[in-house]
Image 1 (cartoon, one colour):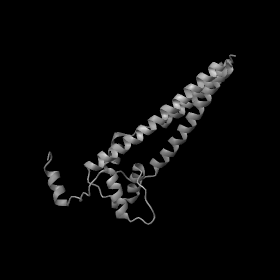
Image 2 (cartoon, rainbow, N blue to C red):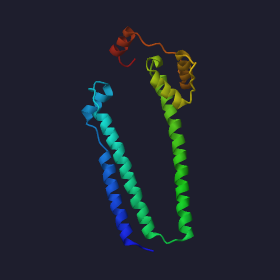
Image 3 (cartoon, rainbow, N blue to C red):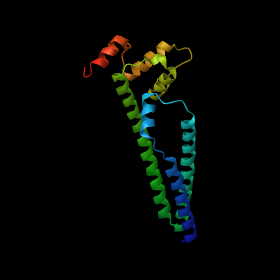
Image 4 (spheres, rainbow, N blue to C red):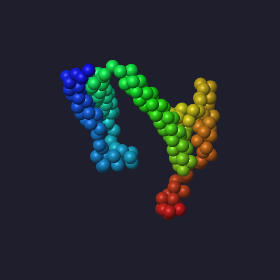
Length: 181
């Protein structure tokens, strides 16, 4: 059962979807990226607005692409059971690959967190929201009756980080003045 009209409509949906996806990809100007990375960028809500716009464009793009591909499938469908089973097998395989990738990325993220905090002195008490995020990523539970110090200790233990005193300004200046040490 070939239906060329559905195939053409599906391809048109794909073109619209690709347009929205491509439009959502925005490359930052290198100077602005450098200012952001060094923390000297001016405060602005434009970045938040752009993020919301990009997210909306991604969703619309994927909806159009999915609709286009489904219309092409319907246009070419031969109504055989083997075709249906093959499609179901592909979808199940994609789900398994996604689950494995999701598990692997969480493990990699935890490993990268541990590597970063082992190499950088960090005061977890200064930003408890970030400390809670780190704790959640590592699976560290927190209770309402838990003190800040107890929770920070649990997060540090999960990271494998010993209590690192913050370097005083004299030590920091010496390290900055003597690179390579």
